Length: 255
Image (cartoon, rainbow, N blue to C red; front, side, top):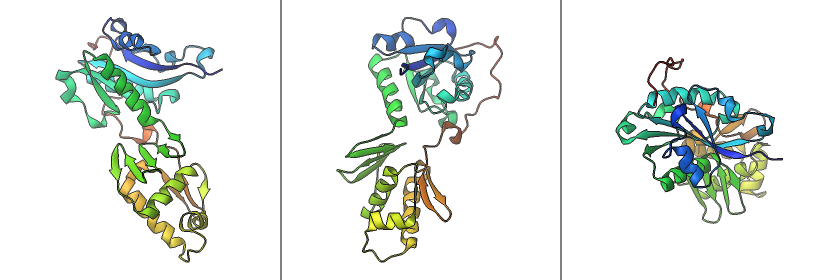
């Protein structure tokens, strides 16, 4: 039986259930919520065997006036495998927004006091960014969206200009994700049986795709075998947050 899908709210324990806090705002909008004190172990979000199949849709850390504590908390959360690749939001007052570092590890931020519709929209947005899907018309792999009908590729919402062959090659690699694809197979399926070029043609086009999509394209070269589109890089592959290795002592003011 599938477990629940919840939004994890992390913050200063006594303030987590305040009337205008994220937990109550999201519950009022119909979302399933689980709360966790900044200093508690992330495993407490999954308290018993019944929650073995539960998943976190997103993590929101209420930093309010202390974004530095939120960064330390996120580092601890990422050590829990079930939270390693979950999108994370940081909530701060407008006066603290300038202190947010792009390398902090958070996917987005939201301002306090909350505007309920905006808060839920931002949660949905980072959830969508981390999700993947495939339909007859569209595929999403990490931050890359391939629209077959429009012959368009988007990365983080921005259009990426590809040639017709680059588009076809990318689409086929995504369709075969997780499987090793030889150069011969790619030549046959992308260029056609009548194409007389060699394997170098595939390598050149792969190199162009990598140049245009960068690290968003997790494509591995397997010597002597071909290529394999891997899983999306985990949070550990992103820039590590700049924060002290140990969280501040309990006597330190909290958000």
